[in-house]
Image 1 (cartoon, each protein chain N blue to C red):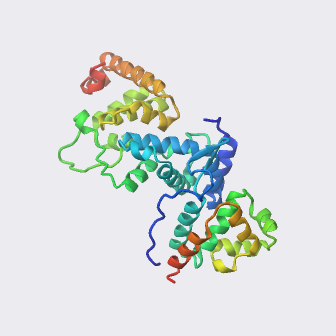
Image 2 (cartoon, chains in turn orange, purple):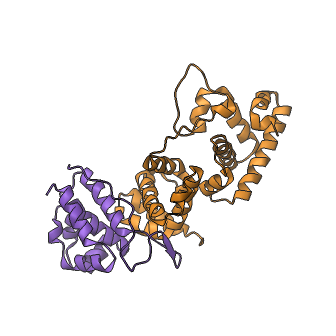
Image 3 (cartoon, one colour):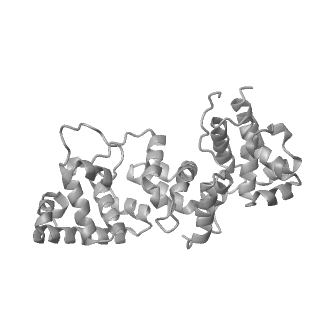
Length: 218
Length: 122
């Protein structure tokens, strides 16, 4: 993979934010390999290895990913995450929709955090949203932010979410989301788990975190 | 708006680089499919001639020109280019220079004309 031309990326994103669909063509030509990596990661996480190996399907979904980014380009911050990382959940939802695959991506099965009175089914995982509803998720998010950087919080939570959903290779999926290597993801996850475990043991505010399976097991 | 099937993933024209290939650090996508998808969006936005507009937008993007430069390249007025991109000009009335570019950059005219007919309910 070639090094990324951030100035060109910012220019093309600005053109898309201004509503210029012509920018989609150079955007895909320049960054299609990154989009393809993201698309393949999602397909693999959904166990659609057949499609991940099919260049035509991947190309079609690369275009879909670019169109998803185009639709959201006004909200993109050039100093923040790369567009395909920033829009990962929307890209994943687009792919899932195209596959016609049911996406029951709940994590309460692992965490046992669900409020029985709710009954709502979430189709994508937004920990900030979940935190509003579930105090233990709030505690988990706060605890993670207390022990590491915001990027690593996202890496850790997405890793555990993917793992909880049965992703056979969560490190690969999350690596594609954050432009990291799978080894980096595993290291970050292990480090955050260890720190959360220490936090639960030493800070009374976070004692309840010991009931979270992956914190307790650390 | 008439109902139109979303384009299916297809390979690029025979003899071309396969879609999804990365050549010399550039990613090669199926530009006809992307143009069709843009045309369908423009049709949903109410453009009268969405395929003509999408072709014009696509070619400007492919050759990476700002509007002024692209109008110069096509040897047309900037206002005429705006009209083309706004979808007020029929596909059959595209400037000859655009048709030349269309062939040069692997856009498949038969598929685009067919989509034009579908979108305009012909």
